[in-house]
Image (cartoon, rainbow, N blue to C red; front, top):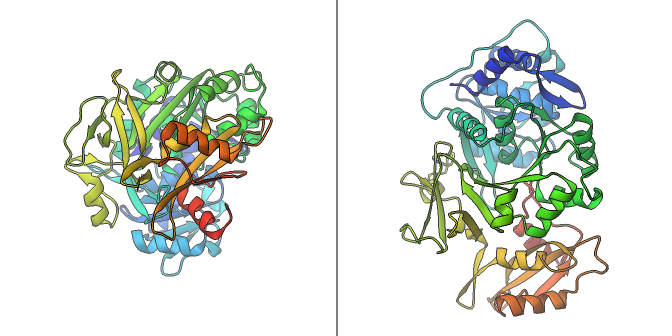
Length: 491
Protein backbone atom coordinates (compact mmCIF):
# COMPACT_ATOMS: atom_id res chain seq x y z
CA UNK A 1 0.00 0.00 0.00
CA UNK A 2 1.21 3.51 -0.82
CA UNK A 3 1.00 6.18 1.93
CA UNK A 4 -0.87 8.48 -0.46
CA UNK A 5 -3.65 5.90 -0.82
CA UNK A 6 -4.75 6.99 2.67
CA UNK A 7 -4.82 10.61 1.48
CA UNK A 8 -7.07 9.57 -1.39
CA UNK A 9 -9.41 7.81 1.03
CA UNK A 10 -9.68 10.96 3.15
CA UNK A 11 -10.35 13.07 0.05
CA UNK A 12 -13.32 10.82 -0.68
CA UNK A 13 -14.64 10.45 2.89
CA UNK A 14 -14.10 14.00 4.25
CA UNK A 15 -13.46 16.10 1.10
CA UNK A 16 -14.22 19.50 2.64
CA UNK A 17 -12.40 18.96 5.92
CA UNK A 18 -9.23 21.10 6.21
CA UNK A 19 -5.95 19.28 5.58
CA UNK A 20 -3.38 22.11 5.44
CA UNK A 21 -3.65 25.52 7.14
CA UNK A 22 -0.96 28.17 6.72
CA UNK A 23 -0.53 31.86 5.89
CA UNK A 24 -1.54 31.16 2.28
CA UNK A 25 -4.96 29.90 3.43
CA UNK A 26 -6.54 26.48 3.74
CA UNK A 27 -6.57 23.40 1.59
CA UNK A 28 -9.26 20.78 2.11
CA UNK A 29 -8.40 17.10 1.84
CA UNK A 30 -9.89 17.05 -1.66
CA UNK A 31 -7.91 20.14 -2.72
CA UNK A 32 -4.71 18.76 -1.23
CA UNK A 33 -5.25 15.39 -2.95
CA UNK A 34 -5.73 17.17 -6.29
CA UNK A 35 -2.55 19.20 -5.72
CA UNK A 36 -0.58 16.03 -4.96
CA UNK A 37 -2.10 14.33 -8.03
CA UNK A 38 -1.10 17.26 -10.28
CA UNK A 39 2.45 17.23 -8.95
CA UNK A 40 2.66 13.46 -9.44
CA UNK A 41 1.49 13.78 -13.07
CA UNK A 42 4.16 16.42 -13.74
CA UNK A 43 6.80 14.22 -12.13
CA UNK A 44 5.79 11.38 -14.43
CA UNK A 45 6.13 13.69 -17.45
CA UNK A 46 9.57 14.72 -16.17
CA UNK A 47 10.68 11.08 -16.24
CA UNK A 48 10.71 10.33 -12.51
CA UNK A 49 10.54 6.56 -11.96
CA UNK A 50 9.97 4.24 -9.00
CA UNK A 51 13.01 3.78 -6.80
CA UNK A 52 14.77 6.99 -7.85
CA UNK A 53 16.02 9.38 -5.15
CA UNK A 54 14.77 12.91 -5.78
CA UNK A 55 16.36 15.81 -3.88
CA UNK A 56 13.65 18.23 -2.77
CA UNK A 57 14.75 21.85 -2.60
CA UNK A 58 11.57 23.95 -2.43
CA UNK A 59 11.13 27.05 -0.29
CA UNK A 60 7.56 26.85 1.04
CA UNK A 61 6.31 24.20 3.45
CA UNK A 62 2.95 23.67 1.67
CA UNK A 63 4.57 23.07 -1.71
CA UNK A 64 7.35 20.95 -0.26
CA UNK A 65 4.92 18.80 1.75
CA UNK A 66 2.67 18.19 -1.28
CA UNK A 67 5.66 17.42 -3.52
CA UNK A 68 7.04 15.00 -0.94
CA UNK A 69 3.81 13.03 -1.16
CA UNK A 70 3.71 13.29 -4.95
CA UNK A 71 7.19 11.75 -5.13
CA UNK A 72 5.96 8.99 -2.79
CA UNK A 73 2.95 8.41 -5.06
CA UNK A 74 5.35 7.84 -7.94
CA UNK A 75 7.15 5.16 -5.96
CA UNK A 76 10.23 7.38 -5.83
CA UNK A 77 12.06 8.54 -2.69
CA UNK A 78 12.26 12.19 -1.60
CA UNK A 79 15.48 13.51 -0.06
CA UNK A 80 15.52 16.79 1.95
CA UNK A 81 17.79 19.35 0.27
CA UNK A 82 17.04 22.69 1.99
CA UNK A 83 17.96 25.44 -0.51
CA UNK A 84 19.63 27.60 2.14
CA UNK A 85 22.21 24.92 2.96
CA UNK A 86 25.72 25.19 1.44
CA UNK A 87 26.05 23.77 -2.08
CA UNK A 88 29.06 21.65 -1.06
CA UNK A 89 26.99 19.91 1.64
CA UNK A 90 24.17 19.14 -0.79
CA UNK A 91 26.67 17.93 -3.40
CA UNK A 92 28.27 15.56 -0.87
CA UNK A 93 24.85 14.10 -0.02
CA UNK A 94 23.98 13.63 -3.71
CA UNK A 95 27.21 11.73 -4.28
CA UNK A 96 27.05 9.67 -1.07
CA UNK A 97 23.44 8.53 -1.44
CA UNK A 98 23.10 8.41 -5.23
CA UNK A 99 20.51 11.16 -5.70
CA UNK A 100 19.08 10.93 -9.23
CA UNK A 101 17.73 14.47 -9.60
CA UNK A 102 17.25 17.79 -7.78
CA UNK A 103 13.80 19.39 -7.92
CA UNK A 104 13.88 23.13 -7.20
CA UNK A 105 12.39 26.47 -8.19
CA UNK A 106 15.71 28.16 -8.92
CA UNK A 107 18.57 26.77 -10.98
CA UNK A 108 20.96 28.13 -8.34
CA UNK A 109 19.98 25.03 -6.33
CA UNK A 110 21.36 22.77 -9.08
CA UNK A 111 24.18 20.37 -8.19
CA UNK A 112 26.95 19.53 -10.64
CA UNK A 113 26.60 15.98 -11.95
CA UNK A 114 22.96 15.64 -10.81
CA UNK A 115 19.96 16.13 -13.08
CA UNK A 116 17.92 19.30 -12.45
CA UNK A 117 14.10 19.41 -12.58
CA UNK A 118 12.69 22.94 -12.57
CA UNK A 119 9.52 23.65 -10.60
CA UNK A 120 7.19 26.61 -11.18
CA UNK A 121 3.65 27.65 -10.26
CA UNK A 122 2.33 26.03 -13.44
CA UNK A 123 2.74 22.66 -11.74
CA UNK A 124 -0.26 23.58 -9.53
CA UNK A 125 -2.66 23.93 -12.48
CA UNK A 126 -3.81 21.77 -15.36
CA UNK A 127 -6.00 18.73 -15.91
CA UNK A 128 -3.34 16.02 -15.72
CA UNK A 129 -3.87 14.08 -12.47
CA UNK A 130 -2.24 10.96 -11.12
CA UNK A 131 -4.29 9.48 -8.30
CA UNK A 132 -3.02 5.88 -8.26
CA UNK A 133 -0.06 5.29 -5.99
CA UNK A 134 2.76 2.95 -6.98
CA UNK A 135 2.89 -0.01 -4.65
CA UNK A 136 4.82 -3.23 -4.25
CA UNK A 137 5.14 -5.80 -1.43
CA UNK A 138 7.65 -5.39 1.38
CA UNK A 139 9.46 -2.37 2.80
CA UNK A 140 9.29 -0.09 -0.24
CA UNK A 141 10.81 3.31 0.71
CA UNK A 142 9.27 6.74 0.26
CA UNK A 143 11.68 9.06 2.13
CA UNK A 144 15.40 9.23 2.88
CA UNK A 145 16.20 10.81 6.23
CA UNK A 146 19.74 12.17 6.44
CA UNK A 147 21.31 12.64 9.84
CA UNK A 148 24.65 13.23 11.47
CA UNK A 149 23.05 13.18 14.92
CA UNK A 150 24.51 15.58 17.48
CA UNK A 151 28.09 14.47 16.92
CA UNK A 152 28.66 16.10 13.52
CA UNK A 153 30.42 12.98 12.28
CA UNK A 154 29.63 10.87 9.20
CA UNK A 155 26.30 11.29 7.47
CA UNK A 156 23.76 8.51 7.87
CA UNK A 157 20.94 7.85 5.43
CA UNK A 158 17.86 5.97 6.66
CA UNK A 159 15.05 4.91 4.34
CA UNK A 160 11.52 5.30 5.69
CA UNK A 161 9.04 2.80 4.25
CA UNK A 162 5.39 3.18 3.28
CA UNK A 163 4.69 0.26 5.60
CA UNK A 164 6.35 2.04 8.54
CA UNK A 165 4.31 5.25 8.11
CA UNK A 166 1.01 3.41 7.78
CA UNK A 167 1.85 1.27 10.81
CA UNK A 168 2.74 4.43 12.77
CA UNK A 169 -0.59 6.06 11.89
CA UNK A 170 -2.44 2.99 13.17
CA UNK A 171 -0.45 3.01 16.42
CA UNK A 172 -1.01 6.73 16.91
CA UNK A 173 -4.76 6.24 16.51
CA UNK A 174 -4.76 3.28 18.91
CA UNK A 175 -3.06 5.45 21.55
CA UNK A 176 -5.79 8.09 21.26
CA UNK A 177 -3.38 10.70 19.89
CA UNK A 178 -5.43 11.41 16.74
CA UNK A 179 -8.86 12.49 18.01
CA UNK A 180 -11.57 13.73 15.67
CA UNK A 181 -11.24 17.45 14.92
CA UNK A 182 -7.52 17.54 15.70
CA UNK A 183 -5.59 20.59 14.49
CA UNK A 184 -1.91 19.76 14.65
CA UNK A 185 0.61 22.62 14.57
CA UNK A 186 4.10 21.56 13.51
CA UNK A 187 6.77 23.83 15.01
CA UNK A 188 9.75 21.94 13.59
CA UNK A 189 11.11 22.16 10.03
CA UNK A 190 9.37 19.75 7.67
CA UNK A 191 12.76 18.53 6.48
CA UNK A 192 13.56 16.43 9.56
CA UNK A 193 12.24 13.00 10.44
CA UNK A 194 11.15 14.04 13.93
CA UNK A 195 8.69 16.45 12.27
CA UNK A 196 7.75 14.57 9.09
CA UNK A 197 6.76 11.34 10.80
CA UNK A 198 4.29 12.65 13.44
CA UNK A 199 2.96 15.27 11.01
CA UNK A 200 2.23 12.70 8.31
CA UNK A 201 0.78 10.26 10.83
CA UNK A 202 -1.60 12.99 12.02
CA UNK A 203 -2.55 14.05 8.48
CA UNK A 204 -3.30 10.47 7.42
CA UNK A 205 -5.44 10.10 10.56
CA UNK A 206 -7.60 13.01 9.42
CA UNK A 207 -6.00 15.94 11.30
CA UNK A 208 -5.59 19.43 9.88
CA UNK A 209 -1.89 20.35 9.74
CA UNK A 210 -1.06 23.94 10.75
CA UNK A 211 2.24 25.37 9.52
CA UNK A 212 3.25 28.70 11.16
CA UNK A 213 4.85 31.44 9.08
CA UNK A 214 8.11 31.04 11.02
CA UNK A 215 9.27 29.03 14.01
CA UNK A 216 9.57 32.00 16.37
CA UNK A 217 7.55 32.00 19.63
CA UNK A 218 5.57 34.96 18.30
CA UNK A 219 4.60 33.28 15.02
CA UNK A 220 3.85 29.97 16.72
CA UNK A 221 1.62 31.67 19.33
CA UNK A 222 -0.18 33.63 16.63
CA UNK A 223 -0.80 30.52 14.53
CA UNK A 224 -2.10 28.55 17.54
CA UNK A 225 -4.54 31.33 18.43
CA UNK A 226 -5.63 32.26 14.90
CA UNK A 227 -6.17 28.68 13.69
CA UNK A 228 -7.32 27.23 17.04
CA UNK A 229 -4.67 24.53 17.19
CA UNK A 230 -5.48 21.65 19.54
CA UNK A 231 -2.03 20.00 19.44
CA UNK A 232 1.48 21.37 18.86
CA UNK A 233 4.78 19.67 18.10
CA UNK A 234 7.67 21.75 19.48
CA UNK A 235 11.29 21.32 20.50
CA UNK A 236 12.73 22.06 23.96
CA UNK A 237 14.19 25.43 23.00
CA UNK A 238 10.89 26.74 21.60
CA UNK A 239 8.96 25.45 24.62
CA UNK A 240 11.21 27.36 27.00
CA UNK A 241 10.94 30.55 24.93
CA UNK A 242 7.14 30.23 24.83
CA UNK A 243 6.97 29.82 28.60
CA UNK A 244 9.01 33.00 29.01
CA UNK A 245 6.51 35.09 27.02
CA UNK A 246 3.14 33.56 27.96
CA UNK A 247 1.07 34.61 30.98
CA UNK A 248 0.32 32.24 33.84
CA UNK A 249 -3.05 30.50 33.80
CA UNK A 250 -3.13 29.42 30.12
CA UNK A 251 -4.93 32.57 29.08
CA UNK A 252 -2.68 32.92 26.06
CA UNK A 253 -3.37 29.63 24.24
CA UNK A 254 -6.86 28.49 25.26
CA UNK A 255 -7.46 26.09 22.33
CA UNK A 256 -4.28 24.06 22.86
CA UNK A 257 -5.04 20.75 24.59
CA UNK A 258 -1.78 18.87 24.10
CA UNK A 259 1.91 19.65 23.63
CA UNK A 260 4.06 16.99 21.96
CA UNK A 261 7.82 17.14 22.57
CA UNK A 262 10.59 14.70 21.80
CA UNK A 263 14.27 14.21 22.35
CA UNK A 264 14.58 15.31 25.97
CA UNK A 265 13.39 14.47 29.47
CA UNK A 266 10.90 16.99 30.86
CA UNK A 267 11.83 17.78 34.49
CA UNK A 268 8.99 18.30 37.02
CA UNK A 269 9.48 22.11 37.15
CA UNK A 270 9.19 22.44 33.37
CA UNK A 271 6.20 20.09 33.30
CA UNK A 272 4.39 22.35 35.78
CA UNK A 273 5.22 25.44 33.70
CA UNK A 274 3.92 23.80 30.51
CA UNK A 275 0.65 22.84 32.20
CA UNK A 276 0.30 26.37 33.61
CA UNK A 277 1.13 28.36 30.46
CA UNK A 278 0.97 26.21 27.31
CA UNK A 279 -1.26 23.09 27.43
CA UNK A 280 -2.91 20.91 30.09
CA UNK A 281 -1.53 17.68 28.62
CA UNK A 282 2.04 16.87 27.58
CA UNK A 283 3.22 13.92 25.50
CA UNK A 284 6.92 13.16 25.38
CA UNK A 285 8.16 10.75 22.74
CA UNK A 286 11.32 8.69 22.45
CA UNK A 287 12.57 7.32 19.17
CA UNK A 288 15.35 7.63 16.64
CA UNK A 289 15.72 8.10 12.90
CA UNK A 290 16.42 4.37 12.68
CA UNK A 291 13.49 3.22 14.85
CA UNK A 292 10.56 5.59 14.59
CA UNK A 293 8.39 5.87 17.72
CA UNK A 294 9.62 3.64 20.56
CA UNK A 295 8.07 4.97 23.79
CA UNK A 296 5.89 7.80 25.00
CA UNK A 297 4.67 9.31 28.24
CA UNK A 298 1.80 11.65 29.08
CA UNK A 299 1.53 14.19 31.84
CA UNK A 300 0.21 11.79 34.49
CA UNK A 301 3.02 9.35 33.65
CA UNK A 302 5.64 12.07 34.00
CA UNK A 303 4.21 13.27 37.31
CA UNK A 304 4.25 9.75 38.77
CA UNK A 305 7.59 8.70 37.22
CA UNK A 306 9.81 11.77 36.79
CA UNK A 307 12.55 11.22 34.26
CA UNK A 308 10.83 8.35 32.44
CA UNK A 309 10.98 8.08 28.66
CA UNK A 310 7.62 6.38 29.00
CA UNK A 311 5.79 3.19 28.23
CA UNK A 312 6.75 1.17 25.18
CA UNK A 313 4.53 1.82 22.16
CA UNK A 314 2.28 -1.00 20.90
CA UNK A 315 4.04 -3.40 18.57
CA UNK A 316 7.51 -2.34 19.72
CA UNK A 317 9.96 -4.60 21.55
CA UNK A 318 12.74 -3.02 23.64
CA UNK A 319 15.49 -4.85 25.49
CA UNK A 320 18.29 -3.62 27.72
CA UNK A 321 21.44 -5.64 27.07
CA UNK A 322 25.08 -5.73 28.11
CA UNK A 323 28.11 -5.45 25.82
CA UNK A 324 27.70 -9.10 24.84
CA UNK A 325 24.01 -8.56 23.87
CA UNK A 326 22.75 -10.48 26.92
CA UNK A 327 19.44 -9.12 28.29
CA UNK A 328 19.74 -7.42 31.68
CA UNK A 329 17.17 -7.51 34.50
CA UNK A 330 15.00 -4.52 35.34
CA UNK A 331 16.90 -1.80 37.15
CA UNK A 332 20.27 -2.41 35.51
CA UNK A 333 21.63 0.14 33.05
CA UNK A 334 22.64 -1.20 29.66
CA UNK A 335 22.42 -0.69 25.91
CA UNK A 336 18.97 -0.12 24.42
CA UNK A 337 17.94 -2.20 21.43
CA UNK A 338 14.64 -1.98 19.52
CA UNK A 339 12.60 -4.12 17.16
CA UNK A 340 9.34 -3.19 15.37
CA UNK A 341 7.67 -2.96 11.97
CA UNK A 342 8.60 0.73 11.91
CA UNK A 343 12.35 0.17 12.20
CA UNK A 344 14.78 0.62 9.35
CA UNK A 345 17.01 -2.32 8.44
CA UNK A 346 20.18 -0.58 7.21
CA UNK A 347 21.95 2.66 6.37
CA UNK A 348 22.06 3.56 2.70
CA UNK A 349 25.42 2.72 1.12
CA UNK A 350 27.14 2.16 4.48
CA UNK A 351 27.47 -1.57 5.12
CA UNK A 352 30.14 -1.08 7.79
CA UNK A 353 28.02 1.12 10.04
CA UNK A 354 24.89 -0.91 9.21
CA UNK A 355 26.58 -4.05 10.55
CA UNK A 356 27.16 -2.29 13.89
CA UNK A 357 23.70 -0.76 14.33
CA UNK A 358 21.37 -3.32 12.69
CA UNK A 359 22.03 -6.79 14.10
CA UNK A 360 19.96 -9.97 14.23
CA UNK A 361 16.69 -8.13 13.64
CA UNK A 362 17.43 -5.49 16.31
CA UNK A 363 18.31 -1.81 15.98
CA UNK A 364 20.82 -0.33 18.41
CA UNK A 365 20.00 3.42 18.39
CA UNK A 366 22.95 4.40 20.60
CA UNK A 367 21.34 4.95 24.01
CA UNK A 368 22.01 3.69 27.52
CA UNK A 369 18.83 2.99 29.46
CA UNK A 370 17.07 0.81 32.01
CA UNK A 371 13.65 -0.47 32.92
CA UNK A 372 12.27 0.79 36.22
CA UNK A 373 10.32 -1.32 38.70
CA UNK A 374 7.23 0.38 37.23
CA UNK A 375 7.97 -1.18 33.82
CA UNK A 376 8.70 2.18 32.23
CA UNK A 377 11.77 2.87 30.13
CA UNK A 378 14.32 5.34 31.52
CA UNK A 379 17.15 6.76 29.42
CA UNK A 380 20.51 7.49 30.98
CA UNK A 381 22.50 9.03 28.12
CA UNK A 382 23.68 8.63 24.56
CA UNK A 383 26.39 6.04 24.07
CA UNK A 384 28.47 8.74 22.33
CA UNK A 385 28.03 10.97 25.40
CA UNK A 386 29.68 8.55 27.80
CA UNK A 387 33.36 9.32 28.25
CA UNK A 388 36.16 7.79 30.26
CA UNK A 389 37.89 10.02 32.83
CA UNK A 390 40.52 8.52 35.11
CA UNK A 391 39.33 5.02 34.24
CA UNK A 392 35.70 5.84 35.14
CA UNK A 393 32.72 6.13 32.79
CA UNK A 394 31.06 9.55 32.99
CA UNK A 395 27.58 10.24 31.57
CA UNK A 396 27.53 13.82 30.26
CA UNK A 397 23.72 13.82 30.42
CA UNK A 398 23.90 13.50 34.23
CA UNK A 399 26.00 16.67 34.36
CA UNK A 400 23.61 18.48 32.01
CA UNK A 401 20.59 17.65 34.15
CA UNK A 402 22.23 18.72 37.40
CA UNK A 403 23.35 22.05 35.93
CA UNK A 404 19.97 22.71 34.26
CA UNK A 405 18.21 22.15 37.59
CA UNK A 406 20.37 24.76 39.37
CA UNK A 407 18.77 28.11 40.26
CA UNK A 408 19.18 30.71 37.55
CA UNK A 409 20.01 28.19 34.79
CA UNK A 410 17.60 27.65 31.88
CA UNK A 411 19.61 24.97 30.05
CA UNK A 412 23.06 23.45 30.03
CA UNK A 413 25.34 21.18 28.02
CA UNK A 414 28.68 19.62 28.86
CA UNK A 415 31.38 18.34 26.52
CA UNK A 416 34.74 16.63 26.75
CA UNK A 417 38.08 18.01 25.65
CA UNK A 418 41.51 16.36 25.49
CA UNK A 419 44.02 18.62 27.21
CA UNK A 420 47.66 19.08 26.17
CA UNK A 421 48.72 16.43 28.68
CA UNK A 422 46.38 13.92 26.91
CA UNK A 423 43.99 13.85 29.87
CA UNK A 424 40.26 14.20 29.26
CA UNK A 425 38.63 17.22 30.87
CA UNK A 426 34.97 18.20 31.03
CA UNK A 427 33.72 21.70 30.29
CA UNK A 428 30.18 23.05 30.17
CA UNK A 429 28.09 25.91 28.85
CA UNK A 430 24.98 27.22 30.64
CA UNK A 431 22.25 29.55 29.47
CA UNK A 432 20.90 31.81 32.25
CA UNK A 433 17.22 32.05 33.06
CA UNK A 434 16.12 35.51 31.94
CA UNK A 435 13.70 35.72 34.89
CA UNK A 436 16.40 34.95 37.46
CA UNK A 437 17.62 37.84 39.65
CA UNK A 438 21.27 37.18 38.80
CA UNK A 439 23.53 35.35 36.38
CA UNK A 440 24.64 31.88 37.56
CA UNK A 441 28.03 31.72 39.26
CA UNK A 442 30.26 29.19 37.40
CA UNK A 443 32.37 28.51 40.49
CA UNK A 444 29.28 27.71 42.56
CA UNK A 445 27.96 25.41 39.83
CA UNK A 446 31.28 23.54 39.65
CA UNK A 447 31.24 23.12 43.44
CA UNK A 448 27.70 21.74 43.26
CA UNK A 449 28.76 19.19 40.63
CA UNK A 450 31.70 18.14 42.80
CA UNK A 451 29.41 17.64 45.76
CA UNK A 452 26.63 15.75 43.92
CA UNK A 453 28.56 13.85 41.21
CA UNK A 454 32.10 13.66 42.53
CA UNK A 455 35.29 15.42 41.38
CA UNK A 456 35.75 13.37 38.19
CA UNK A 457 32.33 14.41 36.85
CA UNK A 458 32.68 18.08 37.77
CA UNK A 459 33.40 20.41 34.81
CA UNK A 460 36.81 22.03 34.88
CA UNK A 461 35.20 25.25 33.67
CA UNK A 462 31.71 26.58 32.95
CA UNK A 463 30.93 29.38 30.50
CA UNK A 464 27.71 31.43 30.57
CA UNK A 465 26.35 31.80 27.00
CA UNK A 466 23.30 33.33 25.37
CA UNK A 467 22.21 30.16 23.57
CA UNK A 468 23.34 26.61 22.82
CA UNK A 469 24.03 25.43 19.28
CA UNK A 470 21.24 23.12 18.09
CA UNK A 471 20.43 21.06 15.01
CA UNK A 472 17.12 21.13 13.11
CA UNK A 473 15.64 18.68 15.62
CA UNK A 474 16.34 21.14 18.44
CA UNK A 475 19.04 18.93 19.97
CA UNK A 476 22.23 20.40 21.36
CA UNK A 477 25.31 19.85 19.17
CA UNK A 478 28.16 19.06 21.55
CA UNK A 479 30.66 19.01 18.69
CA UNK A 480 29.83 22.65 17.96
CA UNK A 481 30.40 23.59 21.61
CA UNK A 482 33.74 21.79 21.42
CA UNK A 483 34.65 23.67 18.24
CA UNK A 484 33.86 26.98 19.93
CA UNK A 485 35.90 25.95 22.93
CA UNK A 486 38.89 25.10 20.79
CA UNK A 487 38.61 28.39 18.91
CA UNK A 488 38.50 30.35 22.18
CA UNK A 489 34.90 31.55 21.78
CA UNK A 490 33.75 29.90 25.01
CA UNK A 491 36.78 30.64 27.17
